[in-house]
Image 1 (cartoon, rainbow, N blue to C red):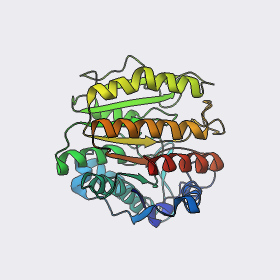
Image 2 (cartoon, rainbow, N blue to C red):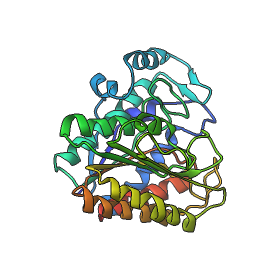
Image 3 (cartoon, rainbow, N blue to C red):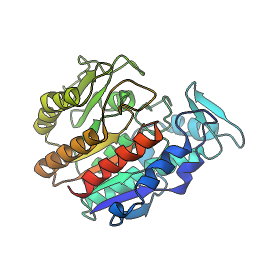
Amino acid sequence: MTLLYTHGACFGHDPGAGHPESPVRLKAVLDALDGPDFAVLERREAPEVTREQLLRVHSAAYIDRVLSAIPEEGFANLDPDTIASPGSGQAALRAAGAVCAAVDAVANGEAGNAFCAVRPPGHHAEAERAMGFCLFNNVAVGALQARAVHGLQKIAVIDFDVHHGNGTQAMFWDNRELFFASTHEMPLFPGTGARAERGRFANIVNAPLAAMAGSAEFQQAARGLIFPALMDFKPDFILISAGFDAHAADPLADLLFQDQDYAWITSELAIIAEQVCEGRLVSTLEGGYDLDALASSAAAHVRALMVA
């Protein structure tokens, strides 16, 4: 069974007119998952993340700085691209809380896997810095939830967003029991993710792709670099930073992925999860800025989770 975690508060994060990370992104995803193909999805309301859960990833000073910066009206810039509105604090707390709740449910055997349809995204958020549309690093918070609560020590995050997950990489860099692997366009924001960035314990695998790379290059990177390293790592739990902005239709980058690429990578990761960690797999939404492509890609991703 696949679980779907979301919350209406995630619509309340409004970075302003013209900002690509808009509430209509989440509407597009949820509308796509409202069709008859997805009737068997079990939908659950995302709880708020607890302070204790956030403190495993972010400092108390940073958490307080973010939440105190949320405006009572209008907008507040957390960085040049990361803009908060009055609803942003609750949205960010629910987004991180969704991943923790999904990890709990899957680790407890309530479901085989889960998808968190939430925003704001998280993978650019560093321990002490909001950036790239991200306030808290949702997937890292979920990874450390698996370790702290469920005794699952070796946690892997696979990130196929078109932008490198610099925040997750930085948080995992010095821990031999945390594994991060990413395909992404390079050069592109945020400028990290070179092949030479491997982590203190060779626990980081970056597979940068040149502009105009498509399905063949994606599969080559995954099969040649990421899957073997993931199998060697033998994780106890796998999380996915599921960004859909490498799609050919996306306006913010220049990769040429198609819907079926997201179905393929999801199926392959589910197979690996079955082989190494009893199928334990949780995915959370990151980027994706063409609404039609985002909707169809997310649907392909969740459909593959459902048949895993």
